[in-house]
Each structure stands twice: as C-alpha cells, then as structure tokens.
Length: 269
Length: 250
Image (tube, rainbow over all chains, first blue to last red; front, top):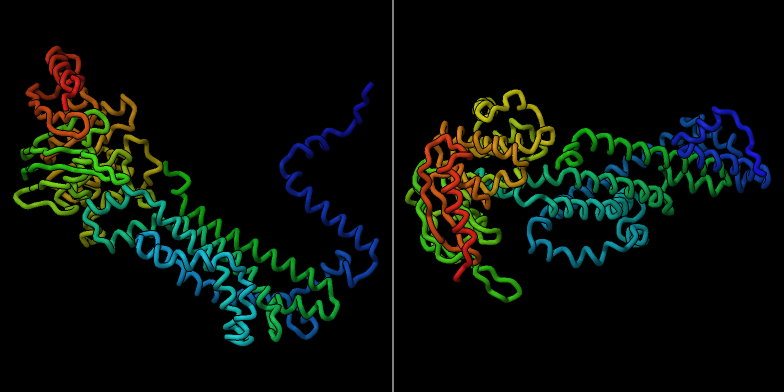
C-alpha cells in the first residue's frame, strides 16, 4: 500500500513553476556553502556568507590600501574597453575582407588557424618580455582574447549573407563600395554583434587574469590576488561575485541592444 | 529599348567536365512587350535571365540593350528574384528607395518617388513597416516597386510568383499586368508554368531541355484582360503544353 504524503496545495503549485527550477541551484549552493563554512570553521579557507556580504555591502570602502571594489572594477573595465576596441578595430575589417575575397581569406586563414587555439594567457610571459608590466601588456592580452571570436563571427556573418541581396543591390545600381556599406555590413551586423558580445565576455575574463601578473597595482584581478596574499578569502569571493555581476550585466546589455536593433534576423523568413 | 540576344551560349565546368547549359540563343524582345521564357526546370532559363541582367557572363554571344552591349549589371535592367531578396533591415519605403539612394538622390526626393511606387503597388500605409511584417505576396510587390523605382527600361523577373500559393499568385499576375500597363515597361518573365505564361505574355519563348535553346516563339494574340476559362485560352494553353511535353530530339 502506498501512502502519499499530504502537502499543501501552494507547495505543489510552487514546485511546478519554472522559477523554482531557476532558483533551486543557487539556493542549494548558498546553503551548502554556509553549512560547509560552519563545518570547516576556518575563515582563511571558506568564510561565511555574512563576511562576504559585509565586504560587498561596502563596495566603496578601501580594502587593504588597494582601493575599493567598485574603484578597482572600473579600472578593469577601462582596460577591457581599450583592449576590446583594439580587437574590434582589427578583427572586423579583416573578417569582412576574408568573407568577401577568397584571396584575402587565403592570405590570413593559415596564420589564424595556428594562433587561434593558443589560450590568451599563454601570451602573458611574452607580453611581459615585450611590453613590461603595465597597460600595454594587459591590453595586448585582452585584445588577443577578444580578437578571434569577433573575427570568426564577422567572417561567418559576411559569408552567410544572401547572395541575392548582393545581386539585387548590383542590379539596382550599387557600386562595390556601396554594396559593402549598404548591404554586406548591415546584413552581417547581427552576427558581428554576436561576435562582439562573445569577444567582450572573453576580454573580461582575460583582464582579471592579466591583472594578476606580478607588479600590477590596480584592478579587480589585482585586488583578488592581494587579498589572497593577505589571507582575506572573503574579499576574494566578493571580488569574484563582482566580476560575475559585471560580466552578466554587460552580456545582458549586449542582448538587449541585439533584440532591439537586429529583430529582423529572427523574424525574416 | 529593344533587347537583342545574339548567339548566347553558356557552358559550366564542374570537376573538369564541361557541360552546356544554353546553346546559341537568338532573340529579340520588342519595347513594352511582355515576354515569357518558358521551359522545363533545369533548362537554363534562369541562367539566361541572369546573363541578360549582367550577373553572369555568357560563354559566347552578346546581349544588346538599346544598341549597347551589356557587360555587367546596369540600372537599365532591374531583376526581381523568386525569394524577393528585400533587405530585411530596411523599412519598406527604404527598400523601394534603395536604387535612388545608390544614385545619390537626397532623402526627401527619393522618399517622394518611393511613396509613388508604394501607391502603385497598393501598399500605401505600409511604408514604415519592415519586410518581415508583410505576407509573401506583399513582399514580392515591394520587390517590384523597388525595381520600378530606378525606372529601368527592362524588368527581369525570375519566377517571381513561384513561392506563392495559387490564389495569391493569380492576384499578383493581374496586378503585375496592371502595373505593366501603367508603366509601359518591357518585361521578361521566367516561369515554368504554362498557364502563367499564356495568361501574361504577348510572346512566349519556349526553351528545350538542357542545353536550353529556343524551340519556338509563340505569339499570344488573345485579347486582354484574358479569361482563363475561355475556349481560346484553353486552345493556346494546350498548344504550348504540347511543345513542352514533346520528347526532345537533341
């Protein structure tokens, strides 16, 4: 004989909602974290949630003389922006050129295939050797990280342009340059935008790592590595949370713009 | 502007095997004429149209439009594709104005002209919409307006109604004839539908199976507007159908 436990109806209704699934895992993680931190009982290994929240609740407070969470996050964001722009300025024209011309494609392709699988961080020692500690070597690493997703998406976007768009433009009197500006670029724009979004995500990952290079003295990555040296694990975790929030926020921003400006990609057909 | 094709042939090379798609086509299309190119699928009729549009080069022969040889796409001819190929990121009005924009016409002027053609195709009020908000038939009308807006001498249409349902298709055929009547353009229309060809054209050019060559030019003298259900229509239709069904000797 089976006995079904009697649970209130609202509980069933709650369980059947998708929102339950979405918050389930975060809740599990937070609870296990708290349980583990109590069990371990050592703030230098796993601090309690409260001490992390304490750090997060004072985002403008100076930490260990290294600046605040927010201040350092902005420094990192500035570096990412520079490196990301450098990558975009190089990758988009090369991608368009490769997508439009077989000769340009052949010229770049083999080199790109060789360099693409190298993780951006493998460049760190070289960056240090060439540019020393400082903005330039960080920008270099960030740009390498963002370059390939932007390039490959641009290439893909240009290649997947409908042939008849270009032909229609030609029969309507467009010159090569006009086809490029009025058809190829707007037609590939949604895919290029995806590349920028992915590229920015990777750039954001790279900056944190780049800031952990010896000799750096600002940025969220620097703050984390300094906190490690001082045994401030709650600051490390707070820094990681900030990195996650900013990364997520920028991704959402990209997606909002994508939905607004490039609606046609989903609806055309 | 008369359109003359002199000895057009087209070979394709695939994996080192040369095959002939079009063989020595000679044609003359008179001004303001509505001409259909009719043939079985794969006979090269689309290739022929693309050669006339300057989108593809003929292996031999030349296309002469109004006395001068066509070497590439020109705004004297405008092509309408089966898949409409509207620019989905542009509004309907900006799609129609595209050709004028390429010519450097200022925005106010080109929107004025585009609005006129929007009226002509019966879609005024849709100028600010995007192509994806329109039905297939409406999109193809926009493509026609976009082609007309550059005021070409010849309108080239590559199975423009092929992707539409029968009802929409019949409606658009009538509308296209009205537009043709109003604008007095030369129209060259590729189709594989005998019914469509007989309903629309002054002249049907029947192509043979691949390699396509002109089998017969049929003049259609039925009075317009034509009645699909009339006996005369059926007679012509049967005759043209016979040309297509005949076993090929080449």
